[in-house]
Image (cartoon, rainbow, N blue to C red; front, side):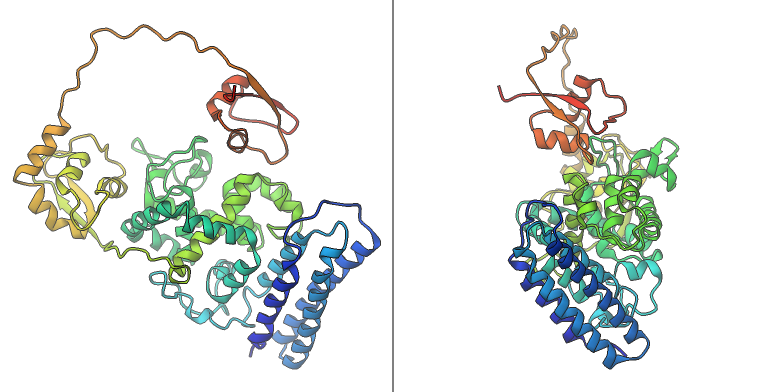
Length: 491
């Protein structure tokens, strides 16, 4: 039994039209009786929608439809009055609508289309309807089917992120896709065990590192999923015989799934808040969410207090995940990649760099195989020559190419000659450089939610290191109200 889907879809369409006229947030004004009345109607619509779902679960389909129709009228009328009411914040309407979508996360009400969750865009999508799914899985059904498309239709930040992935970030998206396909056999099973969707894994990886296993950020986050050192330790990403496990694709995916599962429980299965915690820190997000189990990421009391980096991060992950599932809907075609894993035993000593040279562009890889070989052999120094007999992981499609190109003939000889080239060194070290004179500086007062990276991006020209040195910061710690000196390169 389910509520008829057309009525539910009419809710999203009507609200989208009603809010179209108030897409920009007006300046805040003191609450007025008319504004309070408007927000009261919004709350009433939300409560009516919850009542409709309860009626449907109890088997009262007729009563549910009647209550839902009333909720629709209330929400339409309240949304229509927002742009004519001084001080009205359209973001509140988006937040309520987001919460109403979320109320359907685990029910069998209006989940038409979720039975084919693994649609044509993504490989081996997770099949099955939302009813009866484990708690963590229900929380992320927003990444499948009509519900996410409705959320994207309502959500300006996600739509803006979709445009970025399809334009300026498109090369990064394509690189991330290719990199992921060759590591999928290691990473995806970790998400399967946690009953989390593959699209979410791809979205996080695309935004965090683009699938570069050895990526390290300026803040010290490392690996394909960019774990901070302390957080990595908490989820088992320590040191293994001198190797930082944050760089291991399989272990990193396992830890990421465990982190998401933990934070989904903390944030009442709110995926956006969970992603924000991954970026901004769970402590900060817990303080912002407080004791409000149903608060939306887009609620002004949360969204407006976050750094621009986090406000951009969450929709960017969701947008990349959606493109993973539905590339054809956005005129996007991901390349076909044979990601089957393979191995070779070296027949002659060689480094990963030398193998990259002798493999060339074989198997239609215009950018060469260096990144893939590094990703699949993260413990190896790419410049260090591996002895004969070493087992090397690579795509199965390269097993034949290795035997044909890298064992005998001119290519391994050329690769070895280039790799062992002697670069002359000066006989004496050059004199130390003169101390760098400090140039003019600007001043910036730290606001709640600021990060050093966000401040540097906003002020431009300076680097995080320069700001740390100019202000003698320890541990990159800053606090609201603190005045920072920002090196100025504009003069």
